[in-house]
Image 1: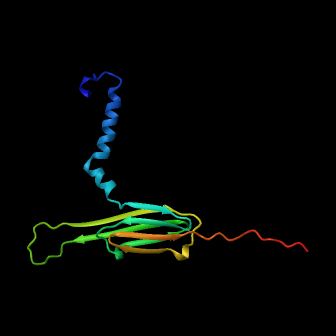
Image 2 (image 1 turned 90 degrees about the vertical axis):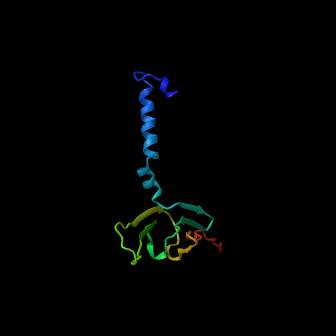
Image 3 (image 1 turned 45 degrees about the vertical axis):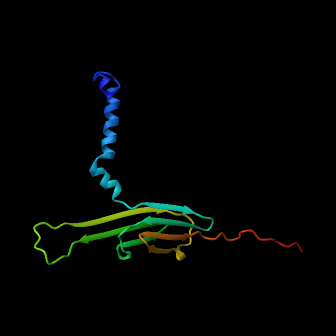
Length: 141
């Protein structure tokens, strides 16, 4: 169908645009950029938020979790290197990765945030701040 559209047709510039967008999101370099971050899910219950991040092969010493003024920031610094000293390498590769995700949560209990890493899944439980009763029954004398 694309071969039937003549180059001087006004629709051809739209085809070029869509081709450009498709090539941007499907090029190997861009796929690496988009896939170089970890997958993240956030769920909300009545009393807490639950953040789940996929981190296969990453140990807990490579993960930093910071919370400041409502912003939760997850940072992964991973370094992989082959340390086989027996071989006489003429080429040796390493991989260093730094990934960061930041999200905002309002009105939470910062003191009771808990995190655990199990089977490549990082779970962060963020309790909501309990609403204090602001109304008071006043007895008439």
